[in-house]
Length: 223
Image (cartoon, rainbow, N blue to C red; front, side, top):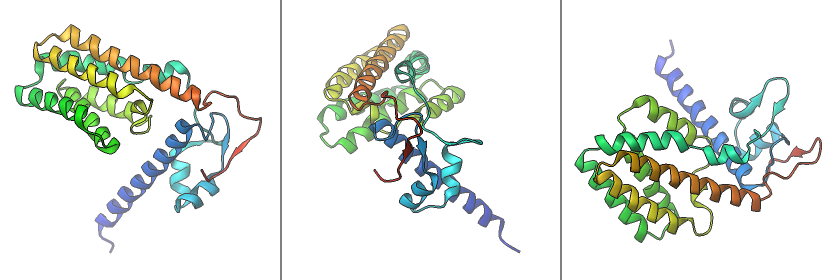
């Protein structure tokens, strides 16, 4: 008889593959190489990634129609995280313990001196993770994680000049949380993500994200 753990391992492996495929598709869409409305070649994508068609179908299949990049409006991009992140910050301002608050300040300082893009991405993620967890709301944290899955890692930081703006935002957010100013903390975080959304829209405009694809155009697997 097969060990039940074999099935569990297989499920985890399939989930991991699906996640990798979804991340690859998101990156191609947001890079502008794939456009909303164009049909994806599932078999070609599976071959390119070296996986079976199953995780590709599970990632973005539209029943009876095939796989298409989802249509996103400019407001969809701007609204990403906005209200929920602000609510999390408002709650964190009154609930975040001092050790976590000190860690938040330290992360903001490290972000200003770190030069590696990969390290900056990691530190930025950790900064917002600490702040969001400070809300002490598993449901809110779950919703924020779900939203985060919709945009490739580092996308909001990719636009030229955004880092300097983000550093200033982070300093002000830390100061508001230190003084337990919950309304100010919420306003600052919402402003932070609103500006990030504007930068993201500008970047997508540059990449031609909203240009209408040719009718019936099929997306090729390669980049």
